[in-house]
Figure 1 (cartoon, rainbow, N blue to C red):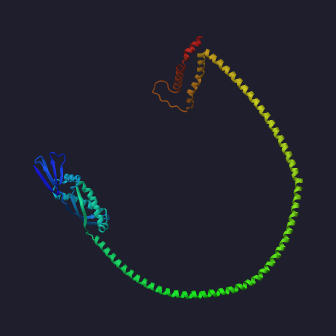
Figure 2: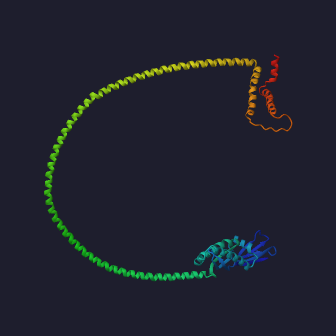
Figure 3: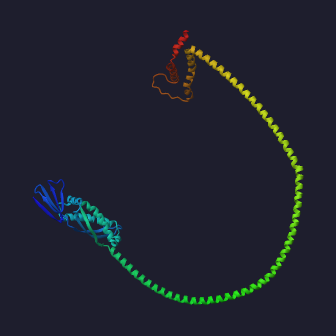
Length: 427
């Protein structure tokens, strides 16, 4: 027995007696009992892996080869990951652990390449490396391995695709240079044009000032001429205005005379209208009122006559209805008395009455039974060779039904027709 030690880049795993689960010691010392306990060591050193993915088809079908560099190690600070690493790699050589990690990373690297275009991988290596790092870390953590870093080292192809991309970029640079030269020439021309424009603007500004001075002179001259013409026009208009006022006063006097004449004519017409209204009242309105009163009186008389006739007719109908009701009541009483007497007779002769009703009904029953046969146009009968056939067969079936009828009546009413008939004959 004795103490065992290890450095910070190594983990000791003790299993056996006294431990239900292995004891994990990442860097330190532990007491181990020989024979009953077992000690194993697991390296925690960082492993550098070169990940090659040759001739992988990208998303658009262009094959390229990619080389990546990954730094991985077994995580000793996390007990769960260290336990998972012990379960996966304890007792294996470092090269075997590197092979497992390399295969896993290479698979994820190929998968990411298949989901991206060559341009995306070539132009944005950081994005590609980030995707591989995230996906691989998720998968390797279940093995207790953590990915420290991953970088894309090299991209190459055997078909000249990347070279074509470089040529395209070179062409873009040349194009940008030509564009820059053209823009410089354009700016030089624009500056020259602006200088000419400023020269012409100064010349035009001078001409405008001259035009403004000439315009001011013309305006002042026009103002003077307008003032002279205004005074002349005002004197002429004053004479014409006075003449118009005189003519207006004459017209107003003439209109006043016409107004007085029109008022007199209206007064005469109003008197004529009043006279005609009185004449119309005497000749038309008064006779019309008299005729209206006469017609209203006749209408009222006719209304009373019709009302009296209707009341008389209603009284006659009421009396007729009472007579019919009395007759119906008397008939109902007679029928009730007849039914009562008949019931008394049946009470005394219950069996006889019942037999009489049954015998009276049996022919009707026989007719109803035979009625369907009367509607049949054709009957097809099949015989086994025993018994009667033809019309006799149908007749016997109807008679059998009639023969069962007394039994049915006996079961429903308790009256034995055959016994009642014999008793009646003896009496």
